[in-house]
Amino acid sequence: MPRPTRAPLLALLCAGLLALGVPVATGAAAAPAVSGTEGLVRMMHLSPDTPSVDAYIDSVSDPDVGVVLPAVTYGDVSPYQVVPAGTYTVSARAAGADPASPPVLASTVTVAPGTATTIAGVGYFADLGFAVLSDDLTLPPAGQARARVVNAASTGAPLDLTLAGGTSLATDLPFAESTDYVDVPGGAGTLTLTGSTGEPTELPVDLAAGSVYTVLVLDRDGGGLTVTSVLDAASPGVVPVGGVEAGAGGTAVDEGLPVGRSALAVLALTALALAVGVRLPRRGRTPRHLAS
Amino acid sequence: MTRTSSQARSGRHRRPDRHRLTAVRAGLLAVAVVAGTIALVDRPDDAARAVPVATPPAPVVLGSPTAVPAARTVATPAGLRIEAIGLDTDLTRIGVDAAGALVPPADFEQAGWFAAGPAPGEVGPAVLAGHVDDRRGPGVFFRLEELAPGDRVEVTRGDGEVLDFAVTRVAAYLKDDFATEEVYGPTTGAELRLITCGGTFDRTRRSYTDNVVVYAQLT
Image (cartoon, rainbow over all chains, first blue to last red; front, side, top):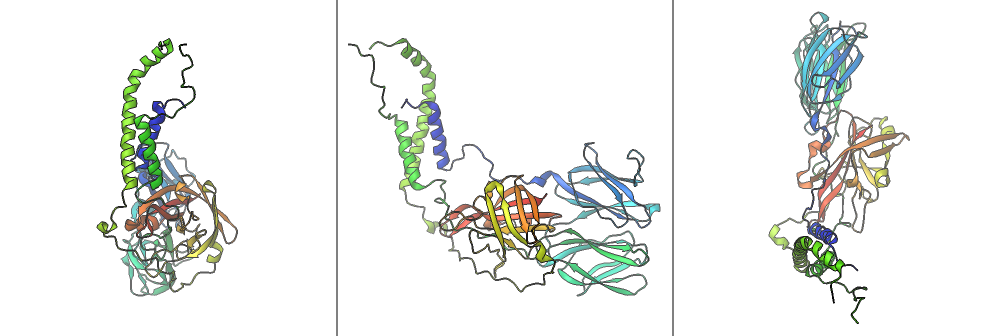
């Protein structure tokens, strides 16, 4: 065996350091979160007399980044779009209109990383505006749901919405306005809507524990109102407490050390031998050319 | 013996290397001393750490059953397959114990779906848990932490439909500081949370220190 050169000794040194738990080079332990630089954004068409529109969400800083939502009609809620965090121009044009044509409505919206935003076209066409709503998609308290209301109905305003059990979702809510979020008991129940006529209407509703909702009140074709619960986000109705006991140690090595005790002993002896410079006897060391 | 020219040449080349070689050997000597010391010395005194003896996990007690809509039986997940780590298992229903902690399946070779949460394919994080090992060897989720972003996770539903998910990230959390909101918090789309144990095995508590959580999204 040839005399050990530097490279194998260095390799053994690294192995030895690793065995003792000293990081030789920083390796990736766990991948970083993906959504650290992105946000969620969606649009709602909540103007009763505005026709179908094409909605555009265009990045101000990067012309290649943008979303087009074609043919959005009154009552439509788009799915959440994942976009890089940043500033965006949100605009609406008549459905099918040339993207280069002047928009019917435009606004600037900042999407912060890790946030969710709803941009809703609200009000009558004559004074159409974009309401920019922050969506709270964090975990509700145990056993509860989180809900808010948007009044997009041209009749019946101002509205009261109450859940059976007394939780008030909206009180005297004017047209084109929205409420803040409210935590409500999770589960199936009854929603009572009272409009300007004073006649209460009862509707079945299921606001599941752990989920977040936007309740839309809309004009119904043929008269009256429609109440729709839009599921913004969902989580388990029962949230487990703490960590999970999912192992019995059959594949674990001694705690605190990446390798077993006996392996360490072997490493110690080997390293010592090499450090001291003990060489194994090898063939060919006997000089071939002896002076005779 | 006279020095041959080749020996003279190798002697010249060796001189700068010799310093580095000495340094490496010194390092090896240090490793030898430390490794040998640890190998010979007794285990650290556990009493100094004052770690309470952990109680074993409570038996699985499902809460009073909530009414499950009939449509749910179609969405119930039946199987889990992850080619990247050679995993192919059926799924059993799991729940929480009296203290509210998630309890993996009693069978160490089987993975479980937390039935009180979303089913894979529904909006929200569907929770799948399995053991990393039993007392003798690997369990169903032994290789879970090898997964990387982009790896494909297949869930087969009770009706035969196959759902494809892609891993977005792999995280590890101390059980004593479990990131409940991050792992179980609401999502706007259909996602998965695959959970098992990791980190160091604490023999006095008979428990791993960490949980490994793989995040995946429906593709």
